[in-house]
Image 1 (tube, helix red, strand yellow):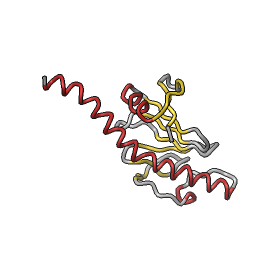
Image 2: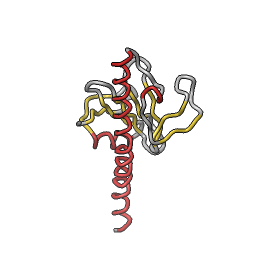
Image 3: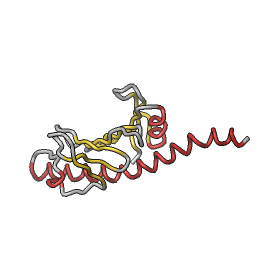
Image 4: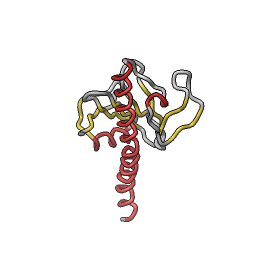
Length: 142
């Protein structure tokens, strides 16, 4: 009986832990998106330079690409900027197997890279279709 209960509870526990990690990521994405929009309104271009944006992310480590000189991220995984608009992305990591797109306007989407990521996104938003990677895509409900 204990084994059966553990088999049922463990997957739910993993989803709950992952949702807590998403809760860490969302405020960072929102702050970066708002900072990029303010920078665009003031300068007419989008910047991926953290000094230009005057925002501090909770986690940084050196050794990025030329486009993004510092690795940007959260304890749950890496972040990235789009170059042509004000979108900010959370990229899938070992701790959080999903991708979050935060763009100005209404687009704030979540899609998984595996079944666990799909389940996490399903608890966070409304199903709107299929993402480019073939996984279900969800829109955040806020």
